[in-house]
Length: 132
Image (spheres, rainbow, N blue to C red):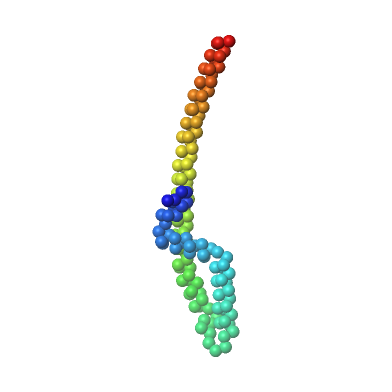
């Protein structure tokens, strides 16, 4: 059983939501950017120096098409992940609100208890003062 709001929220994720979050995490990482840069540089270099056959000659239309396909899928996946983040933020805000309400109730209980103790101490002091 989950003990924190984050664990409870994570347990409720669907497979699609987990995939969207993982993909967004990958696409937004330095290893992905560096890896993609290396692949693009290699693609261009191999097509510029190829002796026999250029599979994608300058201006690299196939590479451009691949980027377009990647963007067509990456955009919606990133939006799904952002929507999930907004949902997570709402879940956290509700959890924080519930915690604050509970804390407020406990503080009010402590305050009323302290007021009763103060009233009892005042009565005891008054009795001691009357007895002297």
